[in-house]
Length: 272
Image 1 (cartoon, rainbow, N blue to C red):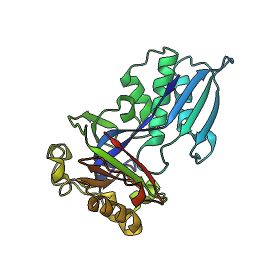
Image 2: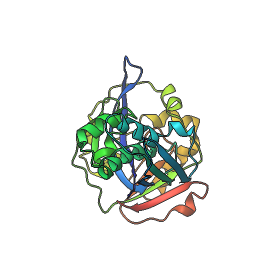
Image 3: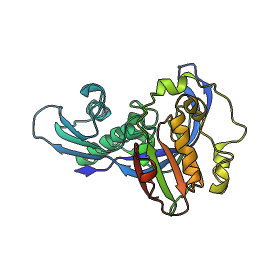
């Protein structure tokens, strides 16, 4: 069985406070984007619980045993009788982009295994398991626009529709680790709640909805700031870095083909 793990963008990202557990409390909007990896899982007929895993496409970083898809399988196998499988991940979504591609792969693994083997886990159970794999993993279980608070795991459905808008996502070669992104952050409580600001017309977002990571990331990596500025020059009604970067997206009123303006970057563009 094949599925297509999609990514997300962050619309606004407020770093509110440092928590006692070392994490940060945040407020952000997760919005699903139809740019996907490809994940295939089939039973392999062997006894026991093991995974014959292979990947193609973009190169995965880190040791195989730390791959989130394998961790998702192991997590589910601890709770349910999951047979041995063959798993093939074709990686399309860029890594270290702030798009949640790895988290989406993990969540899709849980969903697909649950479906293939009729394990009977409901969405709440899957979200609980997904949380142990990453703070943004639970979002990808339902994959609908959400206001995320806490570490990003407390999800509140919101009425936000961007249908018929055109989005361009640009991923430069720069890689930004989460630890680097948080190292210079000074948390602060925003004056206005993101849930209220997001209800304003998109044309007003530029002046009121911000990503707190941008200030320090743009100072260290001015090329990323230049991408955002170019988005606006090319007609974006709203542009922002997604998550902790390094990808930048622009939302447009009409179709745009901007690959020629960002030749050294990975560019994806589509109607939402």
